[in-house]
Image (cartoon, rainbow, N blue to C red; front, side, top):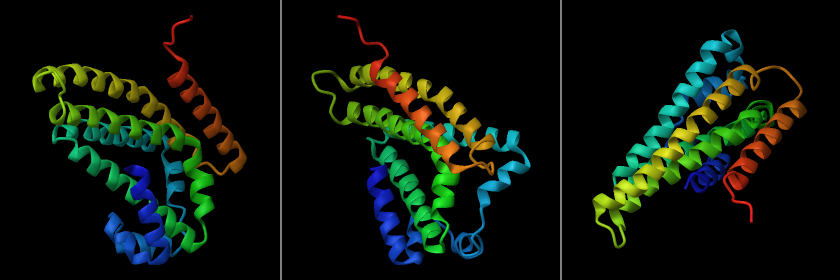
Length: 207
């Protein structure tokens, strides 16, 4: 859902910048920030500690929303994923139209983006566990299915919290810094390899 709406918003906005308004991007942001090629993320360097704390606090809130709104039969989770995906795609498209898309993607997003996006996907999965427990409880009662899948979903969300703190620290202290993009790409690759190695390999029993 996130990826689909990211793609729709990206291509729609690339064709017509006003399409970004459907993705929640205000005309003011488009006119005053994008069209003036403002590297707004560099403002984090004015107060990295405050910015980092605000970032991971906000990301944790979004994660909990994606999880908790699964109680609305999964529709709330889908909305959170769709909205965030559309906003991301629209902003990326606007920056490319203005000629500084690589500055945003490779100069800012890449270093923390792998962890952050992965947590969004995990939160979406947790929310849909709640939604499917209500819609498709299987052989269990809805209450029992909600208890069983709900505990699994809660574990997923709890696991996301330290990851989002790490992503917030990277986003606040490293991503906005005027350092070579190759270093930021390297950080994104290393954190991605470490994270997915853990997700795919941790807990497997030796045969």
